[in-house]
Length: 263
Image (cartoon, rainbow, N blue to C red; front, side):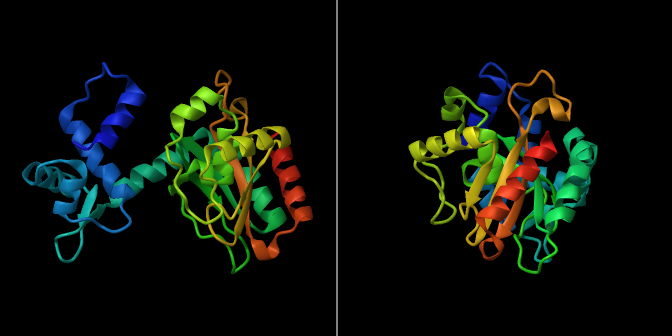
């Protein structure tokens, strides 16, 4: 078994918890397939997860029979099946924040004509939960379910700014991964940026995630989406636009609209 899944589970559940091995292995396979840019082969998956090929083959055949995994035309490369899409769609459709904030996303998209996202902090990453497309041909490419390093996105930085120093240190990887030449990879520089975000009330990603794209984001207070006992926000809303359409005045208008929307 790879050390990364083990470390993640230990952090999430505590070292005393002992997962059911078969269920644990099956979920590792699904998560590995979801994270794969290209469909892996049996051997590639076995090496990545540290699972013997014979055991892994049985897991994949079972998942394939249930519709969770599919095989390409060569019969050698594996990817997620339609059942995974069905479950993922059901999560989004029944999530309280997605449902409650849908009119807010609609209004912001109609007002600015730019790409609007709802994202959630998951560990050191932010996940897109909902999206409204830009009306312009030149726009940010993204997809619901996509995961990105939180420190390299406005959504993620708006949420990281809610955390205290201890939580932040435990959460962020070392070194911080670089996505573009503008990504903040120095921890002290990121801390300074988070302090500025707390003071301003909103975050800006200046080509830190995608070259040529600027993004402005605001965290949604937990009590606004039905979590009154939760201290830190876990969701944020953003508006993304190309550098060619950006101006300081427009950025201020977007930030003001986002702050008003979540309030």
